[in-house]
Length: 123
Image (cartoon, rainbow, N blue to C red; front, side, top):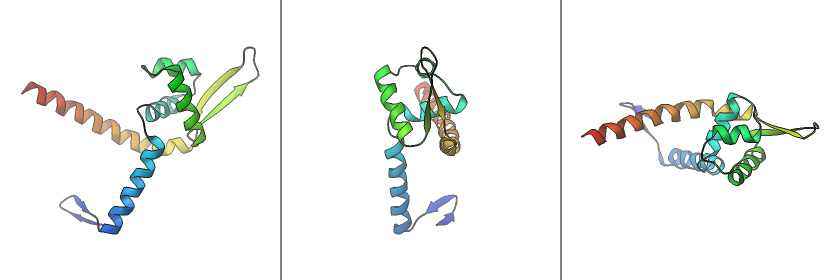
């Protein structure tokens, strides 16, 4: 990879590898909710209803499905406590912490994009 005028130039093999890596990441993190759920649980462990309240707009059915997928991929753990009634707490794993940099960059990009759109609407 060469750095020329702040542009990254990839040869065809590097480009194919980079594309494969991005597709792998998107396959695991696809959809509207996964990164938001991981971010919510990185902040603190939560019960199902707390997650649903914090991540507004997600239905119970979709939340249940997404939590199962995130658990299957090692991003969260589901802890069941034998209380009456049973208490279930979801928490982020150490593996999910590897996404902190990605989420920080997405946050910065999202803010810039929102500002760009607002500016274009003013014109």
